[in-house]
Image 1 (cartoon, rainbow, N blue to C red):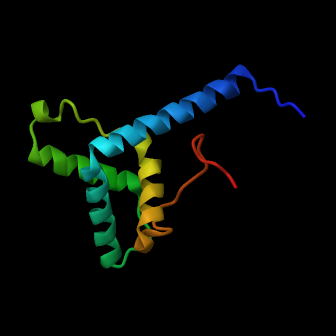
Image 2: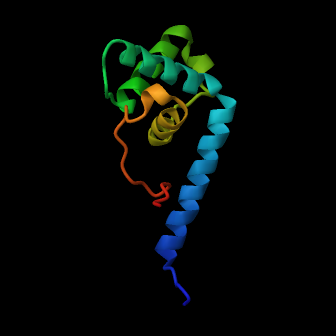
Length: 113
């Protein structure tokens, strides 16, 4: 049986793949983002929190970075909000103490099994 996709479905799949590629490139160029998010999340676990928002951690990370740098130094660094879900999933996948720590939803880049 052949499946025919509409242009909208094909575009959505292309954008999801492009988005994932962009995230992978950013993650490789800025490993400190993962490290800082992991530290923040594990600090919360250590203080008894069982769940928290990746959105909140992104804002804390932005604040910390702003306090360590100037606007000129941050010009090339943009922490894309679209990466939040992927960082949440990556942290929960790699860090056993963070499994289930973030709430996630199905997104265009998520593969259901």
